[in-house]
Image (cartoon, rainbow, N blue to C red):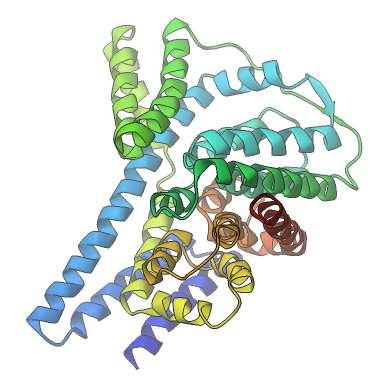
Length: 415
């Protein structure tokens, strides 16, 4: 009875996201409310001080994960908000992309840009920077929405090929299931599936688009801050791989350096304006993450994720991996992957690579299935849960192609 009630809260949260356009109730508020209700219910139903203490420990663990993600999001979004306000992202885009380009070619270029960027840096940063591209081109609403969907898929796809790109890829690598050289193979199916989606989205696209002229408002200090941002990304990867330093700590360090550098060349008033970029970060996005992760943590606490691992073991791993990826569109892929690693199924290298691709890319099938999707939904006004659904067939086709190619290439190399 308790489990049914708690699972119904998670379903209700999903419905509140789907029906946001009808109810006009902010999804961040509803998910946060239901997430809190779920954990309060767990405490009330615990039945004894001992059980209550165990629930408290699980909540603290869940809140630690959420706080880490919050601080990481805040750091990256502050950097991007600052550089965007100074017009530096737009200027960089104008240097990389031609001033006038066909919509079809732009679709391919944006997909490739997001794919490569997300291979080397985290999904949050890659999504924010890639979405920054859209503001520099004069696109209509439908094309901007398609570009945003392509960015979500490309960012999630790029993250599977290196341990710096996606948390689940790093988890599977640290568990000793795959080597870095084997992961690099995943870049080929990821790139082909992103290319196919770009082609599908550009079939009816006609004409050319031009970049919006940007007035250069930045000075030397702003350029230094831009360099600090990219140095922070590189340092995050290096320190994490070499010394196991958590990415959030490195990004907070980079943010502190940004504020110190910003202070050297600015008056007190201007310094306050620099700090204002933290307040510009969209807290709706952060609250939405908080609500979603509280609900996923609750599902983990009541054993729903363990139930999924039991179902996983009932079928051929190659089939189970495919549907695990589909499942990660509804459930956070990190606890899902953690549950599978804890169950420790006996898989071949080929099957582990298939699982890595599936849990990394499968979250793209729904807009709430990945951090990239949630951020895009808060940043692109035209993109909602319902409007995203019409792209699911194309996304499923490209995800399936990438998964099949992963098995084929991995079999060919390791067979």
